[in-house]
Image (cartoon, rainbow, N blue to C red; front, side):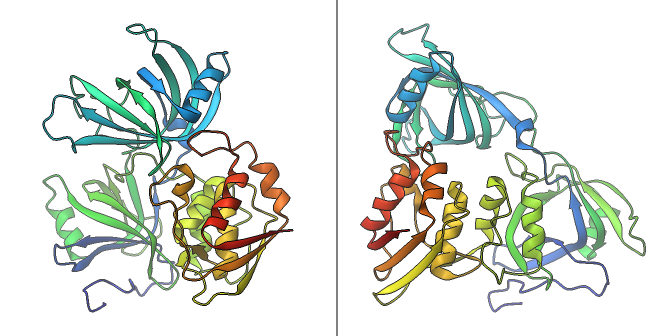
Length: 395
């Protein structure tokens, strides 16, 4: 245990692999292991099953959202990517109180004049809600919705309300999680013997081969639904926690192979991420360690651009060029979406030699994330890097 009370690693004396730990944390930071287990079921599901339909009512879109709406009006579904928004209660006295919603894999499927004001639009879209208010939250009587270009992004207009965000219905992502091959600690044993209450709020840690916590630490409630002897034998049990993770959407199946790769520890070779699809590469970035760049000017880094076929792959390749395998470059990429930080310059300027740059140029030409929707991602990244003090040499 570290000086601050946090656990360095979780240990057990069994031949079976240790993959997960159920851990509680007190107000002072002291952590207690409730259970160690071989595996967990109920964490992964195809996110397509969790796509929701929302309607932006009374919408005055701007920038790339307006252009997408114009294309959508010609009966053409328009892939849009990320769309975030904040729902403000018009009647509240606190202007800083609002509900925040984040949507991924958004597709605009219909756009028509608003019934109440033909000068505005009603936009119908589908996407995966990754963050939002509780399903039981009551919608304010009057709202003003600010539309945003992704996380920390620039403005994309306003609408009067969003239909489909609120409503008393079960949360589809809160499905049970089963801890497989579980060795319960005394706290969990007491809970199994004397069930009651709503369950304790704790975290489910994903561990590596040494028992050290990784980047995956998910909030979960120890509300036991079922307990039975495990097929793995011995004194191990399988425990089902009825309310699952707190995540609005489950992990995509592509995350599991990434977890398996990092179970063996940080990668030693370059491009270990390249075999994964886009969802897997996004998950890979969560595990990587942050590097800030060189401390002294004049450094030259060689970037392998052969696998930069999507945005997460591009970020993996840049981080690996600057910091080596298992690294990501410390940068606010949301600056491309309009984040007011405008990016973060490295400690010292350096040169990035980008090999096979045409791969990213071709694959990302149609991917636009800037507020105006006029610049492809590749054409936006190069001048952005140069503004940060990076000399980019395309090969």
